[in-house]
Length: 86
Image (cartoon, rainbow, N blue to C red; front, side, top):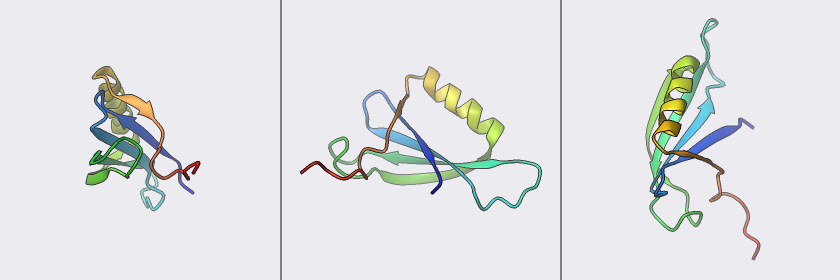
């Protein structure tokens, strides 16, 4: 399973998922997907509605990650797909 990395904005209304493109056929550059989404319910209850997918070279992904962190986005976990304790 491909590991994903998540960021959430300061008011928990938007998320970004960073995930490696395992189907990349380019021999020289690695690419990652950046999926953007909106949190449509209470945090952690339902998955976000994903609205946009970008594919970028890994160098640009690192720049985007740093930019978002500097704007107040925080690292988070994928809490909506975990089994509940009930």
